[in-house]
Image (cartoon, rainbow, N blue to C red; front, side):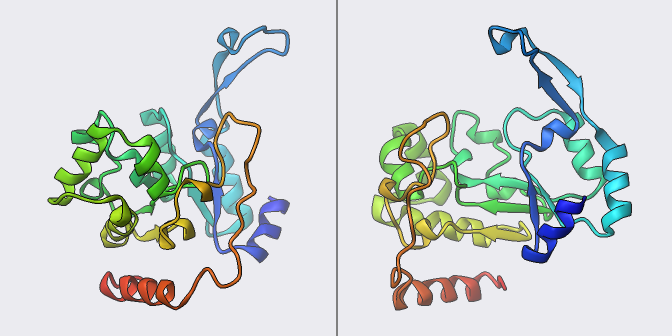
Length: 220
């Protein structure tokens, strides 16, 4: 709680990574040779958040509710009215027709991201990670054939035009940068967290584009 109070001085909102662990988590004994020897344990649950709210007042939290999530996790998130996360790069996979990451399936109490620090840039994802099936689903969803040079803008517009109360646009996607601007690749140990935004990269065109999108979709 003390650390959270200090962070509130620096940031408007704090993201609770791996939120599911507050409901339940996978515990692996230190003597285990592999993680398969672990077992599920109950997390601190509602009691924890009741105490935190008593100490902090209004919650400054966003729940990272990504991955294989159970109803138990969603119920805990919703019990305290914590906003959840949607990521557009997750919307066009094999579960496309029922994907909760497609904008028309959103509720209001969500933050939508084009991608996160663990994702490729949109253009890099489209070039390297998205197969022909993913690309076709994107085309079907948007109702037109999308080219590589416009995919970042199209997904930025999807995020901003959704009903999610907050849209997060990676600056790499605003600038239409490729995979060379990726921030982090999970499960890798080299080349991560080295990309830097350079002076002058957010130029007049980028500012104009962001202002235009913000006005169109009434984001402030």
